[in-house]
Image 1 (cartoon, rainbow, N blue to C red):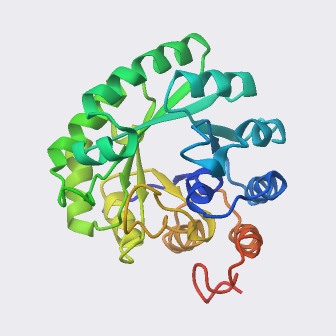
Image 2 (image 1 turned 90 degrees about the vertical axis):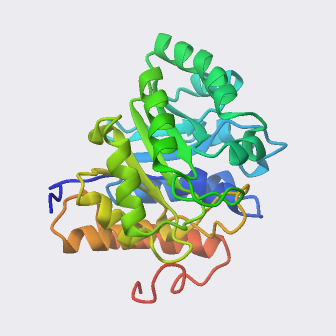
Image 3 (image 1 turned 45 degrees about the vertical axis):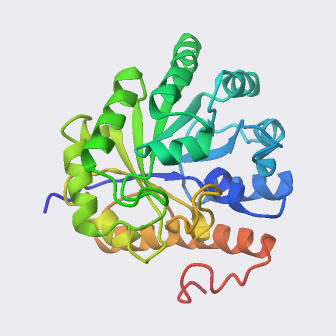
Length: 297
């Protein structure tokens, strides 16, 4: 095994987590979540998305959330910007890191953003060009890397090709998403190993959902291949509103617990992280003792 000494955690609960909730969360509660994550030592937080409020009303307050962020030189705030309109709003809000997204499945791309994979890249080009001009970093998301709700299994070759295109277009990091959480360790390793032949391993991130309880095992399998970036969501909230059966992101608490036990540094205080997870669970009307693991009390 070639386990890393340190892992970067990208916390996605404030965007990827809350966008999947049926209820609209107040800006003050979103900011309390973000500040709780900061207090726990989380340095990379995806805070919102500048998307159509018609399709994702939970993120209609993106500008207000950004206006309320506490300036912190140690913390990187990012936002999802699927098109040039979203990027313009992010620039106005002062965001210095944005993300675009596509998929390794043609069917999912059509259902999710109403275009083909090739057409999604045509949409990204002006976003990356303008972001570069404003010295804004762009991250790329690839959905359905280990399975698709419409196509079933996805060939690792397809994932590698899409990830390589994002990287070559200028995305500094490419996040590989098991959107419906159907992946298992060997499949995750095959996908990650092939993709790492086309994109440097340090520029790849793991974004695994826990639908079948496989996320931690899949993360561990990819850590053995040199993965050093993990996306996760405190209290395991979130999923994908356009992927039937996607029941939630892997919880940051469980990821940190596993990494701590393996001697891998994240710089995150688990007790403070658990407190942030309990706080947002209460806001969502859930039992804070049952969201992630009954051991967190």
